[in-house]
Image (cartoon, rainbow, N blue to C red; front, side):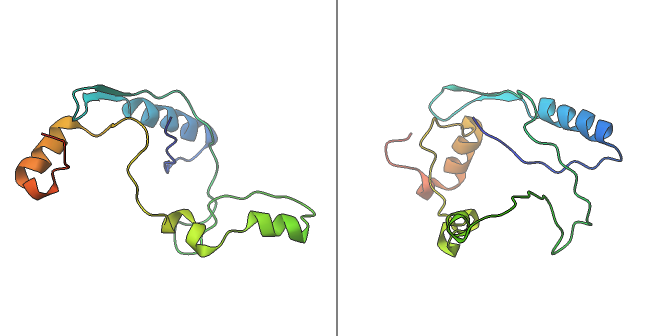
Length: 121
């Protein structure tokens, strides 16, 4: 399962909901991966739909969650060191199935044969 977070511009909650559903449906696709297996992305619905009140610029608040009366121990568990933040995580190949687009990967390997992974044609 993949969960994507997407920005939706709307003037009302109902418009945001409708646009979100439309974006989700538009994201559905099916193709063949480099191993010749069928990859299919299906939109199953919304998990969150929140409002961003600030202008989209440095320092804008994108979401808010309130938890009252956290202990120091809870704060310690909640905060993480810089190295563990997602933005600093190393990029690793997925442990799951290969969902790369086969036609695009073949074209990349044709243009840049030095990138070809061992064991792949």
